[in-house]
Image (cartoon, rainbow, N blue to C red; front, side, top):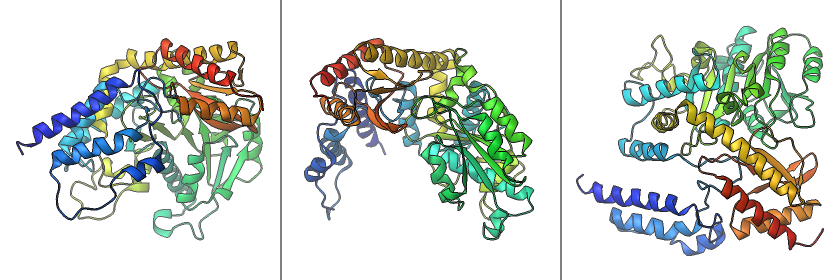
Length: 461
């Protein structure tokens, strides 16, 4: 085991050197996946290879295909870059190699998640008694949350879905905005509902749910098991549903309310943006990402539920042989689908300890301010900003759909920054997401200049 120190030191140096270069390096990968596949040795060797040689080959083989996603000029996919303390904690967590199943298996993992979870609830304005399951991301969080909702609404109708399944069960209404994220639909597929169950609600011009139409949709059918899905942070515009009004309407119909707040829930940590999620505490469950705006390493998300017993009942084991399970309070393994999983609480604890309350507030407000700077700079250069910039999302057009796609492709190839494209209200648009703790005004200005320069040399289409 003494031989591990040089190996781990070398691995840490590789990671540190990569992070140190991100400020000036091209954001684009040097080779495509197809090119990299041709270069990487795909043979499974017969003989063992020394660990140090494996690490050297790993770096040599795959480094050309890395994208600068942790860097300050990556503005695609609402991706943050892991904070220094969170990255270091994750390195240590890998070395500690704890399985976060329950407090018997790892008291450290259990307490880290408990403490970090309490800090999260405080920052996001959620009930202190809510349970927090540390999942892989918003997909996992939405799936877990809708599983808890399924359990609750069917139990209220006298049906044990965990025992009897969905065949023959009372019909469950799932009411959601036309602007819901695709993870909601995938969760419904995975949970056996299917996507046809969704009763869609209209949204306003920015993608926030139309509360009047929500009222009308809920009134169309008689009362019964009902789940209402709301959203904090539209993935294209950043718009947030009127949570207070929508929750009040849903409550009138006895519905379970779930809020998909993958990144938008973090608005609650900023006094300047908290009005966007006013009423968030009135919901029953919430989904949030850590690897987006909190800037912790992949993969990390949070499935939060206001009803501890419901959360545990929908996911927990019944097997008596699992030591440490079955007590009066839910344990780690009762709140997520996995038994064998990484101890994600260490990195979350480290990120929140590094930032503190003021740091989280500054991170949210600064990203929003930089998003507005991005919008202003592109608009001043002749581009069309099509959304109200309320959080960290900016939608930009450069004329017709083909020309906008061409601009996005040119930016991705050139490498000063990286942005993606999206379809919004029938138009192809560039989507800018500012989520990284290390992004500066200079990074935004440099990126704006590159985008406008590349757009200027493309022909009108």
